[in-house]
Length: 157
Image 1 (cartoon, helix red, strand yellow):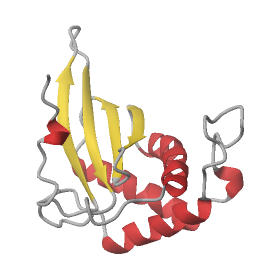
Image 2 (image 1 turned 90 degrees about the vertical axis):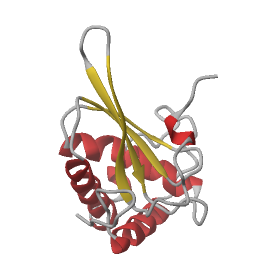
Image 3 (image 1 turned 60 degrees about the horizontal axis):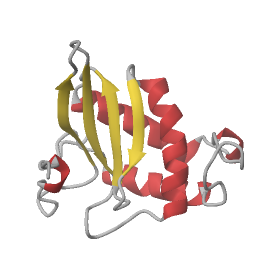
């Protein structure tokens, strides 16, 4: 069985919230993609409720694209502690952390229900499982702790 980098990470050593570059890979034609760990809460001590995480996911899908070039996908971890961010090319963890911080600030302060994309039966596979209230509360909590561009040393951006 192939080794998955995320399963080799010592989850007891990291200090969330943070951004971490997991890997950069080159395709056969020279294209490059990068995978980032956007860890919002400390592993094994907290988990974002599914409705809040689902709403944050829908919002980050748009907000991160507005703030960074080359965003391919932003998908939640099954453990509900953060997200994978996949991009074309490589961005510094500082750039990604700043885009994440700005996106969470928008969620916490500016977003209304009318701004949340993909929350009806036609555009979402589980449209009943959303909570903007929870998304806003989690965004505020995460921002109060600061987002680091290093997973082991708190270097808040």
